[in-house]
Length: 65
Image (tube, rainbow, N blue to C red):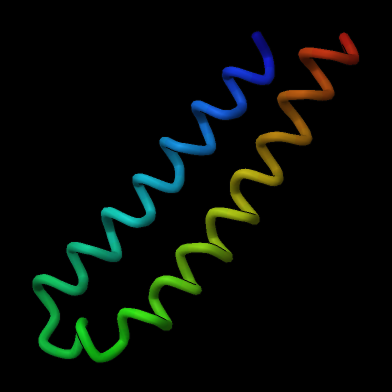
């Protein structure tokens, strides 16, 4: 169950960050010009956020402490 929860959080966090990127592209005049840089920013933010969550969650769920 812990792995399923981890996958679900990964999808939700990416969806949230990517949604902010799409909003920026739609409402910022230069959004289309910088969409590639924003995608890399989203990926880095996702990796840091999800990585921290996954380490903590799996250590608690599988390790017990």
